[in-house]
Length: 502
Image 1 (tube, rainbow, N blue to C red):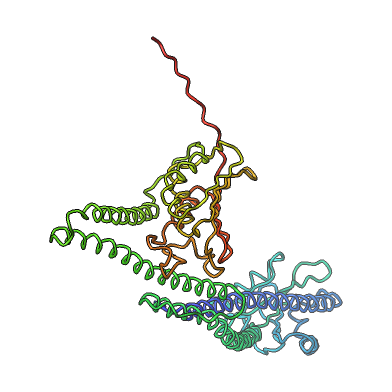
Image 2 (image 1 turned 45 degrees about the vertical axis):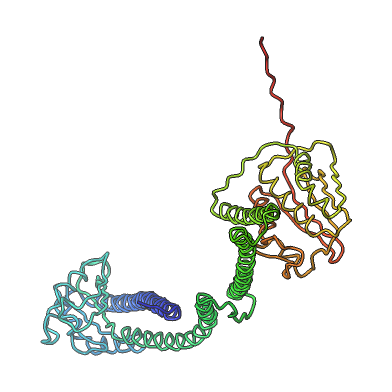
């Protein structure tokens, strides 16, 4: 229903405030209603008790020959004045004096008629309402809140007291009442005040929430627009970051992601250019030489030489395809690394021997520096062989003629460190953080690196990470370069004993 975060937030805010208002109004109304009713009941109880005591004393002073009805008739003016005196100092109320049969003998107070008490409105000779008469006779429950079965327009609060002169039997009842009209007006005013206060508070809070929400939503809108730009291949869009809260952190992370995407896109384009060059050059060479042989342009006595060139270019293509395949297998999780204990020093010796021709071509001196003749590590042997081969290949490729490169293996902090060091052009500080990135090549001019694809170091790092190890580079541009990776120490493999029987 709501597509905007802002609308959802505002709607939720309004609903929460309305719910809070309803709960608060209900609680306040209940508390005020209960408190006011209790106060009125206490006042009416005091009035009826005081009046009953006054009448009780007066009746007791008269001769028993004088009936209660005659006493009320003779002292009507005195009782009216007493009622008026009490009424001035209390809530506005109505009061009646009834005999023991419920017949109304006197009516006074705020309402001069006996409507809230009697069945009809025929004056003081009327009979008390049956429901009210039952309450008046009950000593334990002499309070009532009722509209007398719908006869009255509003509910009244009733309290009663019995008149028992000096321990004699009950001769009559005093009943006082007051309506809830004043309470209803109070509640109406209170609710009106709460509503007005709530509306003003909601208006002020809506303004505050608007600016807060706008601050939250605005960066998200920017991110949405930037994401659409990225989807179309434009990675130069950035999000404005303000403050240092979670939204600012998200904006910073989003910009970092954009920079990373831009960098990867640039590397992807560079990789495609490099791979296209690496594929096109040997294929063009192979195609040209084979066509020359087929056409007879190449003499018979030179064919072996050119066939050797074709074979070399074919191997170059094979290495490139193998690197691409290795990347694909690692990313897809298809290449499984099986740890075993093996001698890493022996692996270094094998790689040096296999690189002998290229080492001699550049007149390089090789040094293998190991803490011991045999040093065992726990790792995938083929994977470690690939790492060392890639590092040695780079070291030979970028070494200056007639210099020395060194392979060292040492143990430190329960780890085995394998390093390859060479003298050459080195790596600039600008390129050093990126050398392990996919498709990255420091020799962008391809002056020295004519056969590389920028995948060797990325493959080496991926293999190290798969083993839970690390690889890092150190260099001083124009002088030297050193690559180091770590391996888990391994135990020396146990030789299997065999029994020979003749």
